[in-house]
Image (cartoon, rainbow, N blue to C red; front, side, top):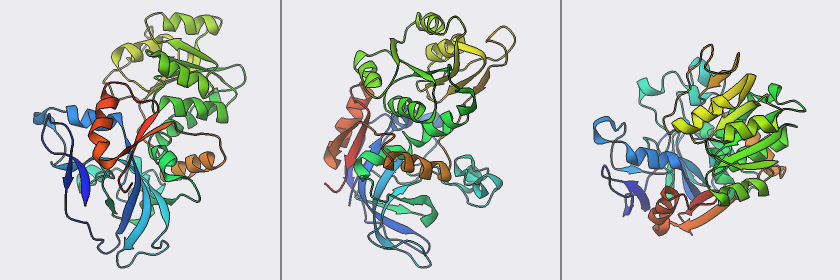
Length: 346
């Protein structure tokens, strides 16, 4: 089969031919309908050799959806031909966190060498994907795999981040979304669907701000050093009750702290390496700063239910498997509107 692999440190991803996988006991083989392209992949490909965490070559793609092509011995509850989405942050299934469905916070994954598809294990940007356990598959129930596959990360990650702040997003409150790209434009829709808060979107690019407006942002502002002041002006000097930073660079994280109100949540989702110190005088009183990771299996079901109800929709650009390297180039240059989705089987 064809697959898109990162094969050498510092090199561009390549389309290669690899052996067809076959499901062993307990495993499920998917014929991949759609696979998402993510900034996390670019972060992986920018890691230097001295601390690179995975074995190469690595088939990319941690957002996957497809049709069950074959099942291994002992698999129950799923059948050939079922259309499914893949839950990416896979854990051991037995620790305290996994028993709650929070496999994104599995306490034994590192110890046991368990990696998500595309982030250590073979990923979804291939004609077929081998899934280790049927519990990692969520039925699509009529959703289009092309437009719903980004929800496995670009929907699940902001949903998990936003859900914990919903008690603070009461009428009259303000939520800020920093970065209106792949995850941010979904976060705006989630905030509009789940809360009465005024939603303020920030970005450095006008096309991303236009996307933010089109999906429901009440305000769309240029993300620069004046942005915290503008947010405080909009809020009568008080600041925002929740700030979600989908960039995570030091300038955006610093800005997030500067625009946070007393008792606000600052949630750093982006992985660009920024950090926000917490202490008296560094932020408003009782600001909570968190850095969540992905989301639970139950939350993925909830995200797909929201999509099925029409509450959220991902803007996508589609590419054939042979075009995947170009999709990564466009993503790296900031040219993708929404999410890039690869169609490995046409």
